[in-house]
Length: 292
Ligand SMILES: [Zn+2]
Image (cartoon, rainbow, N blue to C red; front, top):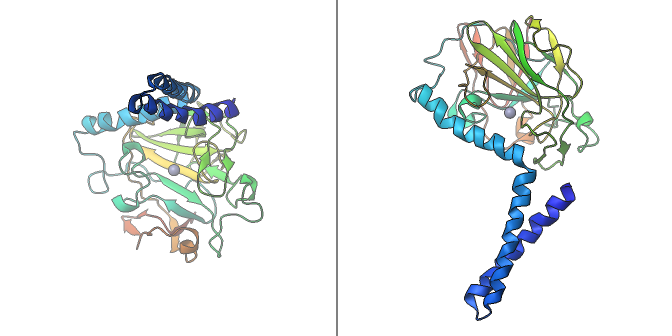
C-alpha cells in the first residue's frame, strides 16, 4: 500500500504537462491535468494524519479565544502541584523552554511549554552502534515515571516504533503523532501528557491511581519522532488540541550545562536555568536529573 501511495505521489506531477494544453495549440493535452486527481490517493490514505493536523490547527485560535489571548505564562500562572522529571537518571533537554525562542512549539498553545528529553554521551551522541535501530539509543526502553500523583485518564498502546533514518526526519508508523501515550490527571486541573512510549511497555492502565515516581511505562520511538525520546507536557485540560500548555518548573532536580550538546545540535541553548521558589525552569542544552 505504501508503495502504491508513493507511486501515485510521483505520477501526480504528470499533471504539470496539462499546462501544455493551455500554452500550445494541442488542447487535448489539458487532459493530462487529470493526473492531479492522484493527490486524492495521498489525502485519503493519510486521512488520520490530515485530520490530526486540522484539529491541531483549529485548536490554536479556539484556545487563544478561550483564554482571551492571555495564555498561561511563568508570570501569570502559579503551579498547583509539585512535579519531578518523568524519568530516572540524567537526561538532556533537546526541545523546550519557557523562553519563546527555545520553546518546543510556541505557536501551538498545548505544546508551548512541552519538553523533549533524551540521553547524550560525552561525545554528543545519543546512540551507539547502529544509528538506524531505535534499540541503539541510550534512552530507549528506559523507565518513565509519574511526575506527580494522579489518575490515568487516557492512554494509547499498540503503535510500533517509527523508523529512524538518521537524518532527523520521521517515518511515522502511528496514526497519532503522539504514538503511544499516557495522560495523567493531577489535582487542581493540571494534566501530564507523556508521548512516544514503547509498545507493550505499560505497567498501568486507564483508571489507575499513580504516585509520584511510580513506573508507568518505557520510553520508545512511536509517533512523530526522528529518534527515541520522551515528550512531556503539562496541560490545563484533557484535550491535546484545546488545552493550554502550562509552564512547569520541576522540584528537587539537579542540572548542569551539557558540555557536548553543541556536537549534537547547533541550535542555541538556554543560557541559564531559572529557579523560583524551589521550582527550576529548565531548557535546551541542560542535563537534568531528579535528586530524590
Ligand atoms: Zn516533543
